[in-house]
Picture 1: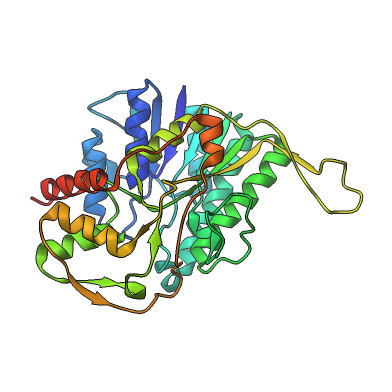
Picture 2: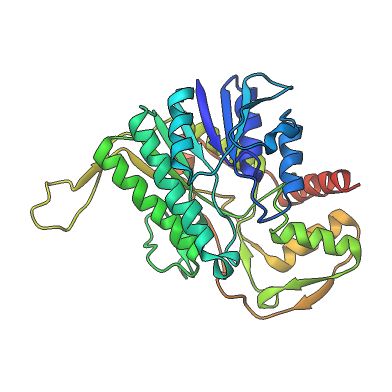
Length: 350
């Protein structure tokens, strides 16, 4: 089995590639190593996986010194010619597309980056899957597609027509594009709506990372909506476990109802699925901060602010479909997960 994992210099992609390699899978990783956050951290993730400094060279295949079953190529998803050539050369069995321009607030400042990576890049992946007999495409969506829904827990059956950020809009677009390709070309696709992933080697733009940094430095941490926010924090190992189970089980064709006059009975048929992947246990932001304080043995200097544009009040995943289909049951307690992150943070930043 050979799997393409896009975004392997990123947080989830790095951990997923390592897990797949442990399972004996051959992995090719790609990433453009953009500067949305520290490229030093991205290169450090690659180095941890045995990918040398040559990774900075564009379009050069670099084989891991730790595991010859892992290789890496630096490229952009939106580079159609390079993506097509990669698929044609490598003959992948499956694809896990985790590469994307991330971040809710950054999409307000730099919207075009999201269209380039998340829309143009994704259509290039879909087209390459179409022409290269890919058995299963798993791709990252996001819990942000739910917007400011008052209904809890959030279910994949809920309407997601009111995004509050361009980032969310691009992720919903990915789901629609994937459904179209599943229907038209029979490509099995599964979208994963991630809920606030945290853990070692995490993203510096995430709140838990900046909280830890500021608390250790004695600087104030910014707490939005005066701490009255809830997130379904999910530990990275639980996320990766879910992805690996899903990868090995491509969806079968299902009927999606249509109200269009003249549409065949049963509606549109496609081997398509979307799953929530989260902890299914929302935590209040102030309680989350207290958990970090305990792990650090240090109290935070708190600075309270109003709600930020593009933020949502609460995320809470209904993961019953994953539980039923895959026996998925995230079980890492928050205190344990934060403890592992703090241990890594102190070691990495010395």
